[in-house]
Length: 421
Image (tube, rainbow, N blue to C red; front, side, top):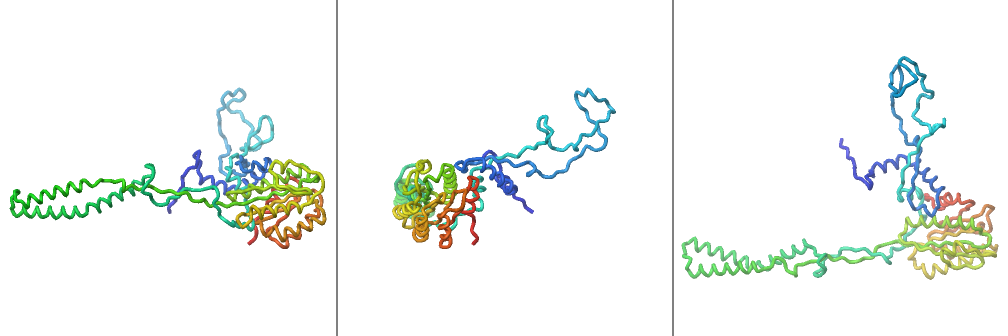
């Protein structure tokens, strides 16, 4: 049997094979450690790597050892209390492998700490999630290009000279230009050898003429340049559009008086999590912020998360503005549109019915996915009741309730869980 061992090394001389094997073997413990790490950090930092710790007892393996049984002798340096032949009581607890911290009687055990890379951390963070009904509608070429080889040119910079192709062309040119002269030279040399073999003297006019012709042909062949500027070939590289997927993420949030700072902070964390999730699927993402109270407006990110208005709530104003922006800037099937709406659910009763109709008939046919999160610790509001009827008409609409910031991640996983085919 043949065994192949892959000893390729990563940076810092870490074996990629051993690292992958370790991550697979202790996947459950690592997922728990990542979950603990998420709770202790801001979602804005979730894209970075993380140091995680696993209890040693989880990675330890059973092993055989020799117990101190029977009669045995030891030499203890600096012994002032015992003499040879004294009997010493066996330590209580069997002399286990756990140490003590300081003067405490409690046994402690160190954790195994290692660092997950950014990619590994994100893989565990988004495990079992996917973009439901994601359709990459168009590969566009906007700002990014890549260099691609496109044959050869007869002109260019010296740094782009293709040596092999130039020498091949020069060789072909020399064969083509000197082909006739070489054939004539071969016949002349053959005729001269025949005359000399037959005993014709060197002074014979025919021999003299053949020698002159041979010298002329040699000179002619030697005059053919080894390489000519005509032979030079230059590598030709052109810029071609680099395919990239693009998406637009619409963030809609209620900024009326009922949305306090804690609820807006919870909504912000949910939006950031969705943005990081979309970044794993799309190369280019544009974010559009729409805030609303009795009227809606498109604003920048700072104003979106920090402004606060007093008064009531008219959610349909935001949906009308959303539909206008999609038609004017992100229509014609060129963008993958995702909408995330956050609200406490408070809305005018008649307006909630209008919102339901706008979603079913106008907005949802134009977007890939629409999520609605209601941030409240009380019962569902009238907007939730109307949105519940949208679920029967469109499978790419989802809604969940968030009570505390701790619910953000579980709700996010429920919104974007893998769907049964």
